[in-house]
Length: 94
Image (cartoon, rainbow, N blue to C red):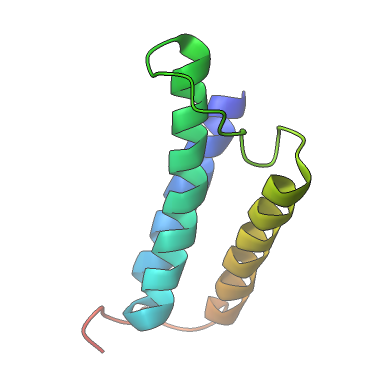
């Protein structure tokens, strides 16, 4: 279930970045990749595919600063998504 939710976060964040375009799209892409790659790293360590690094699972593992930064990143993504409501798609070059 958690893997599905992170995959959904990745797809929705990528769609948001493409819909925004420009600098806002790059911010959305960066925040999405931050959350998803940190989750992929944690899952890889947990499954034994990667060496142990001590990276917490975003929005799941308890840790004061990690939970705060993950929450802020998700809040920024939601704020960017709110900006696009009712607007048409912009190209990356604009």
